[in-house]
Image (cartoon, rainbow, N blue to C red; front, side):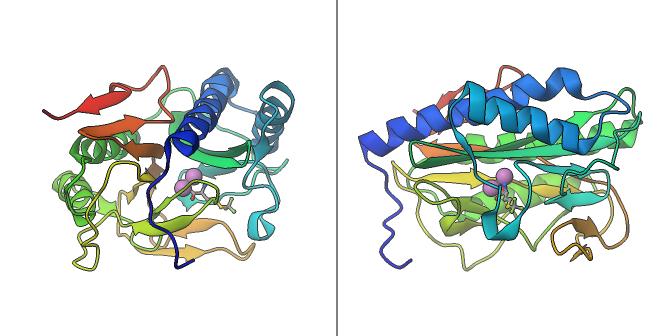
Length: 265
Ligand code: MF3
Ligand code: CO
Ligand code: CO
């Protein structure tokens, strides 16, 4: 794990572009199935079949460190790593994160977004929106020469100015031929993140934000991460390439409100 230079070559970048498009498509495909009464396992099976049969790709979370399913579904106060199952059914007003990670031709891609079931309240909507905007702010900050720490700073400042909190215990990560590679991408200000971004780096940014306090715990199943104070949590994630003058969103969807390629001149 020590010989990572973090920089991908043109061949690797093109493979990551292909993988990114597949992961993004899964989140577009699943949208019409987000309805009251649908079980999280039904969502899992729809995504699994689409990834394997339509896209001829593999599900990165399936059997990853023992995780038993092909996607993570994290509802309401679940922060991340929710395990799809038959008993858990979507209800009107729920907010949920679906996190999709796939492997195509040996290269990984990882992305997630929030969905709202039917109609929900103002604060849930605002939480989802602040999570999305905090990711967009970080994306718009990415360019060669900046310190990695800058990303955590802009996310934390924006989230806390909206009176929400940033989860500390989970972070973004380099990604490529491995699901999780260095460097770690923290979503809060930390002086230890003084690495300087360079063109060719590929990593995820995936802020998790809570209405209440940032503290979380892992449930008895060993996976499901929940807020300690039971407050709602939201997360968005993209896989990103640092370009010569900005960044490219490898997992961009049609519902995203940012350009695929952001240039700073
Ligand atoms: N997709 C998650 C991430 O963003 C990792 C999920 S690992 C699992 O890094 F085992 F919980 F699926
Ligand atoms: Co990730
Ligand atoms: Co993910």
